[in-house]
Amino acid sequence: MNNTICKNGYFGEFGGRFIDEKLAQEFEKIEKAYEEFKNNIEIQKEYEEILKHYVGRPSPMYFAKNLSKKYGAQIYLKREDLNHTGAHKINHALGQALFAKKMGKTKLIAETGAGQHGVATATAATLMGLKCDIYMGEIDIIKEKPNVDRMRILGANIIPVSEGTKTLKEAVDKALEAYTKEYETALYAIGSVVGPHPFPTMIEDFQSIIGKEAKEQILEMTGKLPNHIVACVGGGSNSIGLFSAFLNDENVKIHGAEPLGKGHKLGENAASLTYGKKGIIHGFKSLILQDEEGNIAPAYSIASGLDYPSVGPKHCYLKEIKRATYELINDIEAVDAFYELSKEEGIIPALESSHAVALGIKIAKEAKSNEIIVINISGRGDKDIEFIMKNYPKN
Image (cartoon, one colour):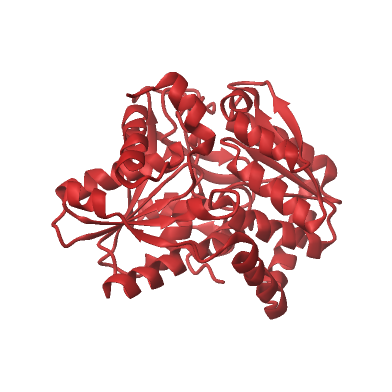
């Protein structure tokens, strides 16, 4: 595992560690312990065995022949939806649970929006014999009921969050608040490439398996690298996982799909890379949706896993150096892509992943017939079916 762009916890000017003094010593311990963890050959072998035999890795690379025929480019899907628990989140949840156990912690504290990180964390905690508290906004609890039920079956303690917009940002606030009181015995199992150093680096390391596999698979299947790689971006873990293996391949264009939600106005979207301003949130420096007075603005997306008012610091850096482009996909485009992939390929994607599918289709329409597009299907859509059929039914 490595993360060559990160220097002293920063990606350019983004990242860092802005935390309470009483947590500073604990984070120094975490940073040191993680360096030992990732360089321990036996521990890494144990983690790889869990990924192989428990998660079911490698996840397949699938040639989407129907979409390819319809839109004129060669479209491939990286199938993270086929992982155990149904999304990419299990990669870092298991990594953090194993790390917590090696540190002697007895509990995981986590937040969740769409519930995929919550389910993955509850699963990992059960496997490793750890207690598990999961904070979730009241709106998301109603919206993502199937995942809430799964978390409870797995033994997690779900704490509803009623403050603010009652979604992901407030869930993170409450989870961090709880962690400050229990850090001696618990690990905050963060749900994306965000938070104070070393969490963005740690989560990228665990998710880098996506890009490594995708690169090997597409070379084996086509004999060449893709022209385009595409993933949705909320906090940014699935996308950084895919992007990481291709950053030095200059001919591979990197695309992130940001949630435009209902529109361009503040409070209508969660497009922090497009509309965000520099600032500090949840212990790190990033681009953040802010009002005119500098207050953190409400974020919105039809996809609960994307409605975070900021983004991982490495994404900010990749945008700044123009190595990746971040393009807007609104709610209706995401819903249309949800149905399109379902009807054309028999694959029901998560609403988060549907943003990437929508962007991938846009790129395919403009691409040449021999161009290769890899789209990361970060999660399956079981959790969204009830919501979609109630609010966006189609015959």
